[in-house]
Amino acid sequence: MPYSRPLDRPVDLTQVRSFIAVAKHGHLTRAAETLHLSQPALSAQIKSLEEDLGVTLFQRSPSGMLLTTSGRALLERAEHVMGAVQEFRQAAEGLQGVVGGHVALGTVLDPGTLRIGELLNRAMDRYPHVEIDLHQVVSHEALAGIRSGSLDASFYFGAKPQDLHSVALREITYRVAMPICWVDELQRGSWRDLAARPWVVAPEPSSHRQLVLEAFKDRSALPEHTIEADNESVIVNLVESGVGASVVRDEIALASAAEGRIAIWRDVKVDTTLWMALDRSRIGDPPIAALIDLVRDVWARPLAEAA
Image 1 (cartoon, helix red, strand yellow):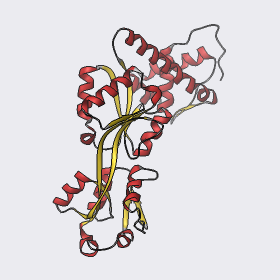
Image 2: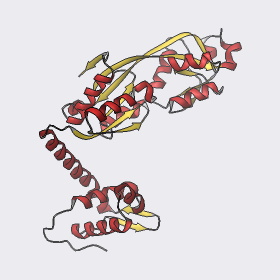
Image 3: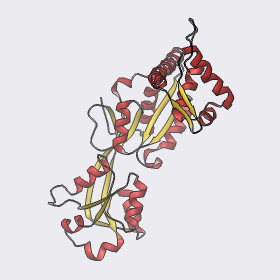
Image 4: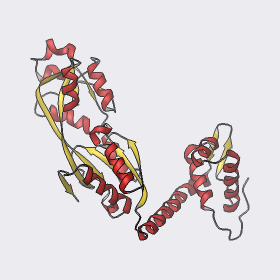
């Protein structure tokens, strides 16, 4: 049932925040937990907002809360409003000499390789008002997330992304690894013999898949049968379990080979670069500038920085 439109009543930002949370979770209980509110209090806020706006935002059902056509139309605007409020707060903190804000940071490899612990520890000491949220993604999702705005920055390995600001952190070497049970047949085999066996690769268009193709470059053969896995530890486990061959990060491949879990095929190496990537237009944002400062510090001497 539509609501009658009130006269010149201001919108409560707390209610807008609640609207976004319910839309995101699709359920009052889960949204209330994230907002640290009781369910009745949250329900009252949504009802009050609907009355203030004069529209019905949600269709209520036993399974949850579904956005109405009006709700969907207003959600993006509500997110823009809260984003503007966050920018306003950050600007005020900047005037006070306090760097604050929120950074959604994508991660593509294990925390140790990315030095995540050191990064977060230094962030808490140096920029206690900057909140860094970690989001594990595969390489192509990292760049897509930066471009869409769902990520503020991300670690990334592969070719330098030309449209983003990028800091080169270190070189990474990958080796061709295969199940230990293939050694007798394939240790002296050809690339064509290896290509005929199953290969474990990350989904298209991931950097890992590109590294596999790079390993086969100019070899007159490509893997005939591939099995997709979007996580490095899963890829390594599948190789160790005898499922297929793959390219595996040098330090992991050498350690696994030393323990007799995989075999390294010949002395083939594929090199790539680990980057910190972000949108060029965000470089001046205080929390982003803080992240860049932390990355430079943690990595001491990054290989290079490209605008």
